[in-house]
Image 1 (cartoon, helix red, strand yellow):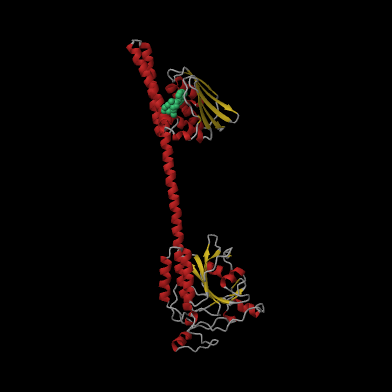
Image 2 (tube, helix red, strand yellow):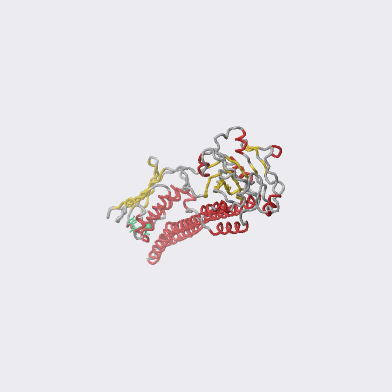
Length: 494
Ligand SMILES: Nc1ncnc2c1ncn2[C@@H]1O[C@H](COP(=O)(O)OP(=O)(O)O)[C@@H](O)[C@H]1O
Ligand SMILES: [Mg+2]
């Protein structure tokens, strides 16, 4: 006896008669009349099919879950045949209805289903295993599991027997066909004589041309409401599905709904973790950017003011030692003003504000003011009044400050020239000196960072500011021939 036959104790049925045991007969006693009389047919139709509600009013002692809706019974192909359109249908074996007693131990079925759905880490494998379990429990020939996508479309995501995946998966628009309606309504449906039209669907069911199939479609309801999948068990032998079978299949399907929901939650958690990581990375980058800005402002603003302060105090010391009181007092006053500037620069570096000079005067006048405060070197400024955004002015001012600071610190120059012009569609800031020159990098790139970073901090700061504005920086110099720093940025007018 084949496995299926072992599970079909009613193989001896003849038509609707019964020759089984008395206990089986007792079960038959509470089976409602087969609901296919015209009187019992509901008025509602779906896709032109008459729809009947089966097992109305009783589950015959097989306790129906209070929330389990009754199944729809859809005698689709019967109607087609009566119209004469089913002439090419293969005559189905007069296999009697399977009967009303459960052919399986429901408790074992549910515990097996819950175990495999809980333990199998891969959702597709868990669905395929459940499809197999349900097929065997209901003595069917196979089971299709339809996943429901975000747009409501149904897609076959697991099958038993396992088949090689088709080139295009079987898709059904939301609400289409019986399966779509099961998904939409959350109510199981029974099709005793179904004759699917879709070729791929027929292939998945293993149907010959014209062959009919009996199907039970149950919704895998999500604990959050709605339907997460549909399980459709099919039998090539014509059969009904008992209320006990429908109830048990529904409970298995609800376990599937829970599993799918868990998989979605864990995928959402994964997405959340990814987003969290990128948020942390963005925060770290922002912190690093802020740290660099503070460091840059301290380097470009405060240290320049402090270097200037040192110069004025040294000059005052020499003047007072030589009793040149007027010059000494000038230097002390200059030192006092520079100390105020250093204080303001430090405060603004901490609070993130722009240079106070720039804020008060704008870029062109700010450059003139900055040049005036430079000790020892005669700095000329030739700056056009350009209407630039504040952030561009701030960046150009810091670059000029650092370049002039380098002239003071390293060039041993007599004269320097700061120019700011609009050339074509670019803004060009240039600081040149007649000092000793050095082994300059030419066009500055990030490769400079790899070299002795600490000794190139000022150059790197200039480079990064220019790069943020989408421009480029070059430092050209020859020993004894002076140095030229040129920042070119694309035109960004206010
Ligand atoms: N105008 C200049 N004239 C001569 N040497 C310069 C000039 N500008 C920069 N340099 C050289 O380039 C080096 C790097 O400059 P920079 O990155 O600003 O660092 P820092 O000024 O802190 O030493 C300086 O130490 C100096 O040797
Ligand atoms: Mg420097």
